[in-house]
Image (cartoon, rainbow, N blue to C red):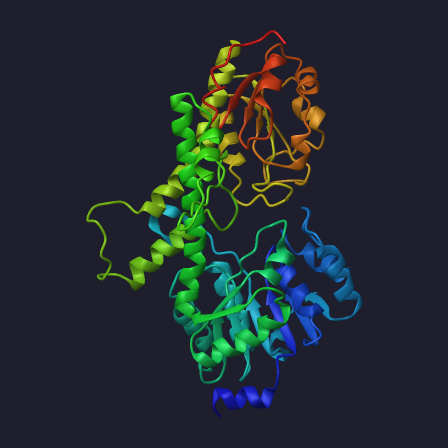
Length: 477
């Protein structure tokens, strides 16, 4: 029987599975379950010590995500109460489904060797393969190295199931395009790139995603093109951030304000002028931007081996951008040292309060947080470090102080690493009283505060890209 005949026999997609109950899988499952075109959705989650708790929470209609996610909590309660969504660790239920998606992290253990860690993804694919039935659709949503869908994933599914992709089942890549803090809106409104291993797979995957799109549209392409699209769009964003971060470092060195320069550049508008001016900062975190450059580089090394025409001996522009962004926590450490040295205090024994452990404002997402390498550098120098974050309850081997007052008590330096809205309301007078220091140091890594207000209160100010302020005269306050 042909794949088209299998689809006709099975009928429209009605039962869906989502493997991976994280920042991508949870909102996707909730939106699928909310569609009147689908009958039921299973969310699959391993009973692991670190994340098994999500199963009970989700089945109560509670979101395990602590950050601000508009509408997600209400939507989960709705679909659970309607009996349309259930989370389970029983992967055998995959056999009951018409379609299954995989939203599993794909990190790099070692960036230098360009070898991704697909162990968790492979485990998820094996679960699907062992329970795969003729006429089913399998979609990889995880960001993956170009060539993975029609390569490793296809081979593993066929080996585990004894079925053939493109003949017995459909296989596609439809990468997620979401940002923490706006998950539901992004899934509904962003265009969805869908790349099947063949035309029928693309068409079947479009059938799956179209019901959850509002203003977004489906963009069909090949599986490899979809893989490159996802990795390249994050690589380009990382490149844009690196460009403004490098400009910030230049402005610091030349004694000028990067935000004045940015405003000037951004003011030139007109036909044919496209400059996406982003903002400098203390570092780039998250699961995507910190690794997707390496997926793209790995892809061209494998798929384009022997045919890539590129300036001989020159490093990758994209990898250089990644290294610049990775450098920013080290720069934050350097200007912290400069500030503390101005007070006459030794860093060995000084207390530094880090405000923000999540990598993104108003979120609990701590994946690859730039606060961590900064903290490591401080500890190596002998500093005492306190960490505060209103959204993060805990982190392995890093105590998170629940009270801002406790975190700031006795602090010689205060480093703002995350743009949480709570930190925009900080009062320099109150912060100085809490620190108990005559000239506490404030390091602004996210352009959150008014430098002059802090300088007037006797703070020593340091900020990313603030060459006009970083060498200010110390005032008595």
